[in-house]
Length: 487
Image (tube, rainbow, N blue to C red; front, side, top):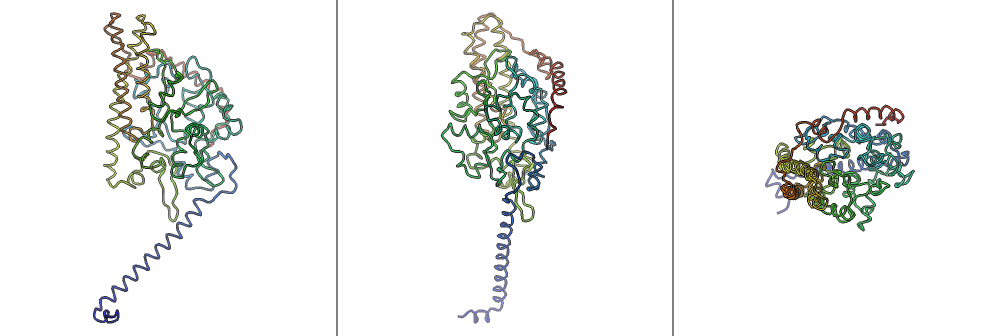
């Protein structure tokens, strides 16, 4: 039977053929429109600017070429978001958790530690904290310029001018007039073609020591590596305070501890227990790599800088923030649960990690003061060493997790394991100390008043009124001579 005969016998089939033809033409039209739209998008998104200078650090200049990205970046000034456990709202962590004052006794973090705000505030917050403008520890000299390393695109410019070694060993105050632009475009992008690029030598050097060539990283990997320039564990190596990532033995908490132990490194000596301590910075990349999203190839930018579509243009949001504040464009891109369910899934993990972390804090505070009681009773160094080693190991594991931004979600299994091992070591330290104290006839150790930040600071001998006054005097003398931050 011919098609003509079929149609004559079945009049409705003609309409079916007509509608099918219309549908095909419509779909082909959508495809053509999409191709044209994406070509237009590509021309816009990857248009190389023609007059951005090398090491252009003024973010507003970049904004002339990339207004959408720049406007979204300006939103990092917003500090209104607060989730159950974190956010970008200014929050005095020592006031909410006075036990931290004791854990960092003798170190500058016991003076001042606040929740990080957005990238927009990086330079201002670095200038204003009580941790800058004074020695990091009583025995240390002036803070090095290394303390600026992750706060501004002016840092790569100065490293290019001075060389990394000279920059790092300069003083923090001496670089103040140069470090004026806050974290932005030039930290991650090549001004010639907008490709993602590594601007901090420490990351490149860490890869080289591991036998890896970071220049071979693909675009998706680079969407995490540009973050890994700063959101990592690091330390200031040697007299020159050279910024170094301690990854030579691996990137786990145990591996990094082993690296530090290999040459008896310590950040400071605890003023209560006299333990040589390690201070974790913010090992976000290390923990992220240990979690399911990192293992599946998800990039930092996928969740913290999602794509946004405006008309025919798709671009990356530069409002770097918690994915919980934009679940519909982050989590929901891959997961089909409701926003409420996804949010509760995150909170469930964070709640359980917080319980472990809080318990470890309590055990560590007790261990520090029991060690003090043992020292005060005349215990010799050889007898104290096993207990102090365990305190150092336990607090390193606590700090590795506590200092991470989002580690309890990025890698909850890894973080729970680290904290659990920390609890075991802290309890073992207390058992060792109990034996020593019993031998000295001591059955009770007085604990400090931890009802407030002020009482905790007073218990370790901090005169906060004097410290605040000295900081204000420092700002009056120094800050007027520095250029106003260009944001």
